[in-house]
Image (tube, rainbow, N blue to C red; front, top):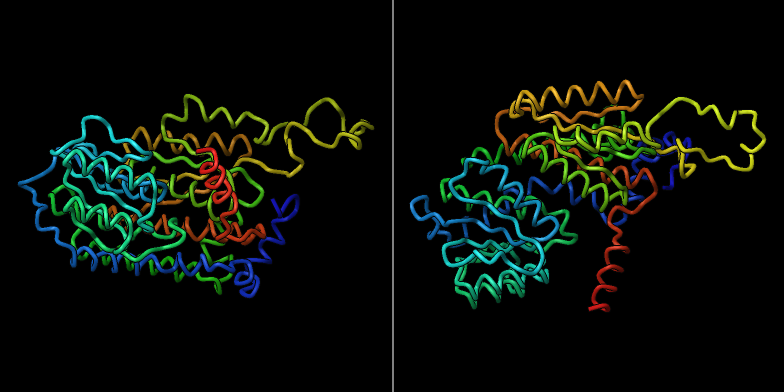
Length: 397
């Protein structure tokens, strides 16, 4: 990390200087995050222009299979959370290269890729076509995925190509919700989509680069995370989507690791990290502070890398939708963390409309991930490790 020991003050200095923020984001990830509301509205128009007349509540498929990778798979999780556990149609997210054996002509396969070139998605779309599944693609026109759809006589919802794909969550998620709504599985409505777009705009205004960290929730959350190992927990399907998005964006934008867990299950295993080497603890009895070995061996179990990193608990609170037992578990987790000297951040998912409250917290988390990268002197858009892994994989294949 480029902001070790005592680097929080310098990180705040970076984030409160608009020129340093701009210089630290040469690829313009902040501008891409700010375009989220436009993504929602553009995706709605793309759905209106596509031929979705075959989708109706009285002709539901056995299952909706979302073939996607990375952000595409997360968009599928948004659909699954919106449809809910009581959905009469199963929602399945498939990543990789092979569809489950039971998928066939009775099922709807939605292949999603903002580039239209994603190798795994192309493989899944071709297999779905061979099995005779009803096939829809969310992808750019004139892309390889569009060609697969055309050959299979499927339907294309044409969206603009985006790079990187992680900046196009709403481009992919909104068409899935529209498809589900046409099948009678969800109820969002025109007002619901516009409400989500409006809250995305509101959060973008609050988190704008010119806003100082003490009034900017995105910068404040980023500064809370500097020098820590985030432990991110949530307890409802919608909150779990937001938590997974945050962990993924921390990795991609800030190159920052995080632990991810689901309430109340974390009480059986992951909560044990509260007693581990990254949690604050009593000063060890040996070696003593005066021990001359301290100068030669300055590291301790409480600081295994000499970086001062410690845990930070981040809770996504969806109290209006949580089971009371989950709420109790979340409160208990916050209390336990505090008793161990672990700081806690809570992101509240307020409101009645699921899409709106998800949009608000995801947008805040997206901004925080970009600001954390900038605060640590890391280009949020850089993807060297991703490119290197892809190249090595191709060579190995």
